[in-house]
Length: 263
Image 1 (tube, rainbow, N blue to C red):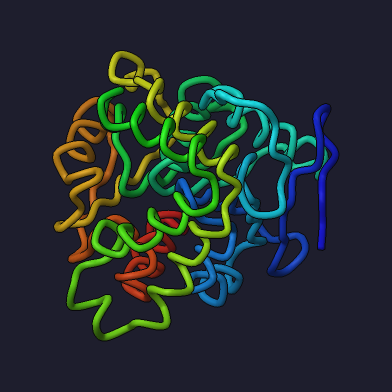
Image 2: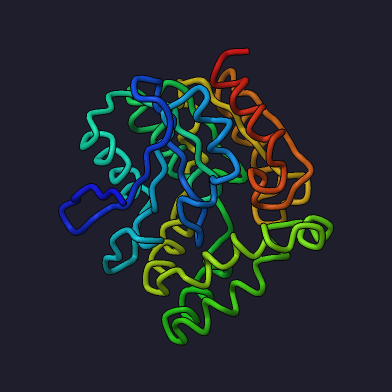
């Protein structure tokens, strides 16, 4: 188990793949950990040194008092790259990870080769969505995380996928139940407050936007908005709900690899 020491605590990460290969950073969604990307690792490590990490407040990483900001989480990524002496990397983030990717593209493009943002938007939801969830989680603690887990299957996967792949769906949703309530609430605030709609045009690195046709959390319209505001951005849509990397599996991996490899 590997950790990088930040000023306030430890950030948990995992490196897979050949040393010396280009680095690809994978950034998890709200309420999951680095194992959200397990289905991609075999394919990605054929071409890249894959760096996964638990976002602050998730998994085995530090949980500090909230609220957090996407800027703060973006600086955590830069600190991780610095600690591992990685000057530039590809970055692929989903949902909240996609917000972190947008922040990096806007503010630290010189650290990126190419950027992939999945199942995300320049602004996700509004305070009427996030504030009651934050309040409930902070008030009720772990039981609230279990309730969120049970409700998340319908948001994260289409009914046919959840029914046909119960073990895969359970593996991902169990991550939510195991997440620190304080960390989850602090990250909800980061997502609530992020709004990159006016800054997207400053992203100059090659960008791929991935969406899910059935994604009710971040519908394809949000992905189209990003694509339209970033010059030269590519767009791909899969039959999936919110976690397209899990539901689309190999097809997701192939599309991302084709983009990163320039094919």
